Every structure is written in C-alpha cells, then in structure tokens.
Image (cartoon, rainbow, N blue to C red; front, side, top):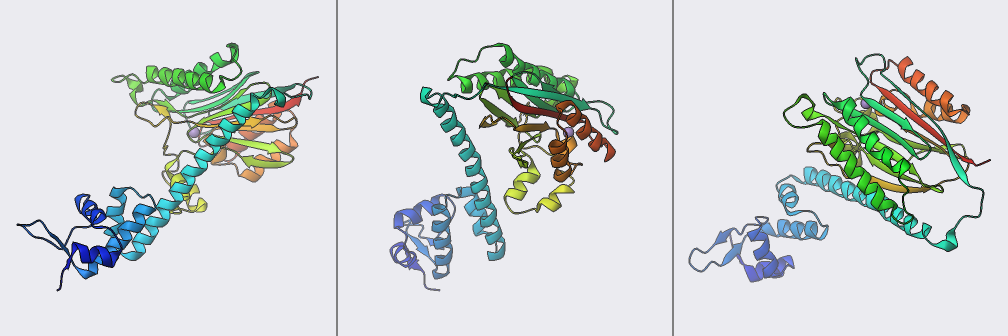
Length: 358
Ligand code: MN
C-alpha cells in the first residue's frame, strides 16, 4: 500500500496540513503511519473519504466527540446520526427564536409610542387540582390569582411540597410591583427563589432528597402575559376558535421526537414518556423557556399538568374550552374527563380568559 505524505494527502483531500495535524491531535483522523524518528505523518489513500467527512461535519458545527462517533459508524447509521444531530440543532434554534421574540416584544413594549389606547384588560380565571383515580396523594399544585397562573407537578417523596413551594415563591410577584422594564429581572429573581425553595424541601440526606417539580406559570402585566416554563406541564391558547399549544415538553421522548428518532404515536405509549429533561430540583437542568404574549380580549389560556394531556385527546380539550364559557365549569369538566379516562395521574388545570374590563 502506497502511503501519502501529509502534503500529498492534504492536496488530495483539499484540507490543509494544519487541519490534518489538528484532526490527528483530536483523535478524529489518525495517520496510517507516523515515522518514529522524524514524526512525519503518512496517510493511506482510503483515508481520504474520512478526512472529507470530518471536514464537512466540522463545517456543520458538530462537536468533536460526536464526529468521532459518526466516523466509527457504517454509512446508514452515520446518516441517521447526522439527521438526529441536525434536528436537535433546529429544535434548539427554535427555542432561541422564542427567546429572541420574547426580548424583542419586551423591549418594543417599553416604547411609549406603543402604549395601548384600547380598553384595559383583565383576567377571569379558575384553578382546579385533583388526585385522580389511582394515586394515593396529590403532588400537583394549581394556582390562579389576578396576576399569576401556575401549575406545578411535583415528583419524588417530597414532590407535593416541592411543587407548592415553587408556586409559592412565584406568588411574591403578585404583590410586588414589577417595575416596567424589569419584567425579565423580576421573573429571574422569582425563579431563583422558587429553585431555592425546592432545594429547601429537597435537603440532602432526608426523605425529600429526590424531590423536584415542573413549573409552568404566566404572569399578567396588564397588557401582556409572560410565560415561564420548565418541564412537561403545558399551556394551550384558544384564540379565534383555534387551539394552539404554546409550550414544548422538556422530556426525553420529546427530544427523541425532535431528533426524528420517535414518532408522536410511539411517544404516546413510551414507557419513559414522563422522564424529564428539565425540572426544578437538585441536579436538574432548570433552564426556563420564556415567552411574552400580547393579551387579546377573547383569548383563553389553559395551563395543565401531564395528568390531563396524557389521557385526554387534544380534540376533547379543544371542545371543552370552546364550549364552556365559565372558567370554573371548564376546569371542572377537564378534570372530570381525565378521571373518566381512568385518572391515572394527578391532574391540574388552570383556565384564564382575557376580558375587557367593564
Ligand atoms: Mn403528572
């Protein structure tokens, strides 16, 4: 087998000798032979394909460790891995797009020229949480007040306390006047307090060490609703008769769906469908998704724990929200539907209508 010098190999692969030395150092492309005396690297012609693949994958932004894995795979497997990687990049970009939109909306809202001239808006709301038909206790918390809507789904032995503590920490936002322009800071501070409160429940060594919670909440500013979301509770918006889901689950199965490794149908019966990627709890990634929604009279929001969404089809949720004018009756009916479907989990619903103030 005729080995190529690094210069010849560089020319043939259209990569620089510098890049080839780097790939060698990173363990991505080891020369076929290294002269023990001179240190000269020599490459086999059949390494060209791999050299080019490494270059393309680096151009794609793939992390080095993953490039190493892809290079060790057969072509079919490698194709699947690249597809999954790219789907993840797009999902992450979508999440950052939401954050960018949040910041744009937030900063635009500060412009005095944008001040509203229409009638002031208010919320009309109801919250209901139920143990369900199977669980011994209720670890969910549902809360609705004039400025805060929240659902928390606790887990672990101190899960109920963790969820309640997280929501309680956010409730300080109701009484404190959030200075216009410091909404982000106020939310971040409140989340920090919520996290501390959950850690307080989950102090290591005691029974609650494994306790944590999801937290999905909306803060009313008078003209907008700021959404904070960590975990697998969900928010739906009913607007002009259409139902939109405005949160993305932070679960392992959702990320498998995002990566194209699982279909939504397969996910519905996946044994680990409730395994969380993010949560408030010790050792958990608590990065929140943030969004800002302009309030529109006639909008209806539903916050719910997974105890509703896993057993009640979206079509039924849509129908109840569209056909039940009173928030109290709507949350009651949704909880009843979950229980009629077996009520396998705690179920929590918050319904809030944006209404023009009389
Ligand atoms: Mn649950």
